[in-house]
Image 1 (cartoon, helix red, strand yellow):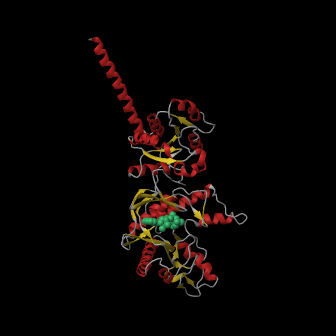
Image 2 (cartoon, helix red, strand yellow):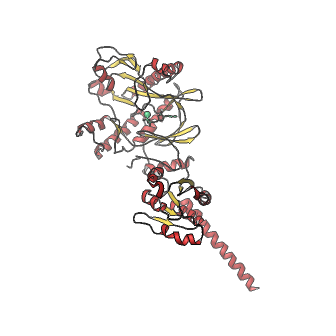
Image 3 (cartoon, rainbow, N blue to C red):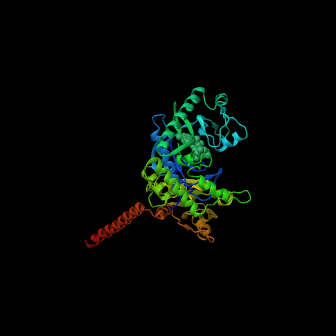
Length: 464
Ligand SMILES: Nc1ncnc2c1ncn2[C@@H]1O[C@H](COP(=O)(O)OP(=O)(O)O)[C@@H](O)[C@H]1O
Ligand SMILES: [Mg+2]
């Protein structure tokens, strides 16, 4: 099964790129939250993605958002694709509201060193590894470049939240945790700890980000815990962590997982999803990138294909706009960019990054006169068809400069179409979309008909 490691599109504006998730602007009030199949372990993203992980994360979060609406309104609007949720844009409160029911992980390590407070919350003496706290505790951290534990008092003093806001999110976090624990308990799972994020939408406090997923929570199997509380393993990622620890070399963890580990991890994520929601997750056989494009097009967030008009200088804008107008008639997205192969060519891979990683059919039209290095440079860096359509001042200019567009070095498969309208049409055909093909079939038919009619008319006139 194919994985989704990256997803980008020249048609979507990126808001944020995290270790695992990407978000894109949907409109002024909404964003698209996409969970990739990337997995991060020991704070690092591994080079091997886990099939279906993104869909599990996204659909599980959505399931919990629906289940907990009675406790707190949240940002979730609807599922666009198994890996994408449409959510309401919020003004985030920059805190992670961590709730813990057991002494484990970093809290246990600090406890062993003698610490008896987490984020200002006192914990009793005499606890053993993985022991439950008398009550779940809220231990917030800030969301900064490097997160830090913070006490309730500091949160208010430093202005991270107002006193009322903090009291509210503190209580809601505990209620969400209680409900989450109860639901998971019935399914034989212990909610060990988790974190919640909140934000404001207008004047309303809402739960944002994700909820009760394996990436934001620690889960244990009740049965494993009962058998041996000190060695209980975290469901999902523990398996990957164990492999990485076992294969650590020179103090460095491997970045690549062997196929058996990948398949088993994927199976565990799916199993966790089924166990929690009671439904099985069946993803269609097509590649996740293709599937996402289809769903985004169906929901109106994207056109079926797109053309990127790249100009070598701002003076090429008039020429580019003529081409753009023609393309828009086909209901295909078109965007304009400026980059010069000779003057800032080193920027091509960054300026074109979204095109390099997009999944919708795309084509580039390179617009640069005189010595045209742009088309070649683009086709050597971006894996989509490139068409040179250089603007010429006059016939002499054409004769002097056309060779720089026609003669491309090896590994730079740029084509040249001189007439701007033809260049636009050639780009449309490069997309190879059934809808475009249909439009061209009609157009060819109508050109033939016009010619036939003109000929018939002429014959009639001659007969007279
Ligand atoms: N509804 C929302 N509106 C605005 N920002 C949100 C919303 N939901 C989540 N966020 C923010 O989106 C970002 C998601 O990033 P994430 O993928 O978790 O990576 P990281 O937390 O490492 O930055 C977080 O900064 C989170 O606060
Ligand atoms: Mg996060």
